[in-house]
Image: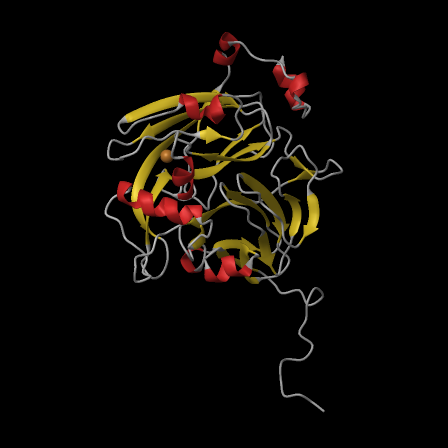
Length: 357
Ligand SMILES: [Cu+2]
């Protein structure tokens, strides 16, 4: 039986037993309603039972989105109307069963490639849907970690990805997250951040172009893409999406899991005034996490995860620490933390004042 082996945290392919279709049919089914980023749907951190089939449904929505404070627009493509798409959470050994709906109002064919899945280009070959169609894919989530998923239609892969079609699947170990000594690591809240490098074309006067249709934006966008210099780099769909009203929230003493995906381009997350207490920068939970990181590194085409327990109140910035990408191009958000200040960790001994001779 696969279940006992997985319960011990063994996920090496050699130890794996493959279930037959009748065995899979006997598994318990659970339906999960996805929630919009930066939130993550309710889930258990330690699996309470045997592997299940977890059903998800996502609708693809093409739409024009405003991506900065100057009203610049992106002819975007999204899973469920958001950038990134919603984060899905299962436990290792569970089966993901996704129904992917391509709304009739869309113009393009789409599909989905799960980096967590095995075979058929991540599922992309089995999920090609034209506008007005839907498809259902099942795969075994047999490796723990945070994994990118993204659209990957033949001949148009990078365009669909940089136009917004990516998200994260988090596969938790059945016995939960562990530090290198094997102690259980828990979080109080999980937030999901998707970082997007955008390539908005400019007209002859240097102004960003606005397109009436998705298809019209393609040629110019591909030209900008080939230069490899993004016009904007944003968290969750827009410059400032995670600031002000959209800022993430926490309390002193609270442990937060920050999931960070980048489907196309490298990034280097950093929490100003904080750290990564435990970080899986390559995002795969069977590997021991690193501790005390100032800045970590998410490879383009992956998702990573960092745990942090807040010790001081205040407004923190969470950003890509190429500071030009953060402050000029948009890759920055805020975490507003309530609680009591700790003078032992930091104290202003003398406030700024005139220089004393
Ligand atoms: Cu697509």
